[in-house]
Length: 173
Image 1 (cartoon, rainbow, N blue to C red):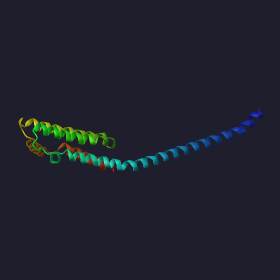
Image 2: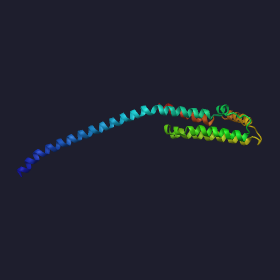
Image 3: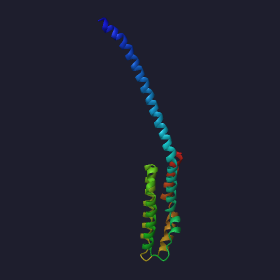
Image 4: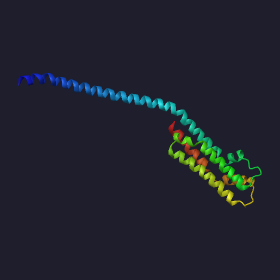
């Protein structure tokens, strides 16, 4: 029995020291892991921040470029018919959109939904205005009708999307 008590006197304090060292080391390693993760997160944010700003800039430019007043200046109607000019305008909007598809990974889903909705609404506006013209209308007539229709709308979908994009930039940065 005495051997057991002697062994217990030596082992018990050793176990207490071992448990204390384990708890201290565990706490130290947890803190070190959190510090490393915070450091890595900070480094990633410093590297991704310019990419995110660029994405916001590109989407703002996209929204401006598909705005009727800007789009009609860039895409000339020439001697095209209504249908030909409509197809050319739709292609211009689609090309702009496809060029900026990758930007969706840098912005919120809500902003991307506004951008996509704005694109669809602009194409829909073009289709509606074109359908309202007589069958032999020229591209110039479509251009004029689109400008008139866009001036009658209180806030174009591209402007609404731009407002949300700017709001997100303001919140994020």
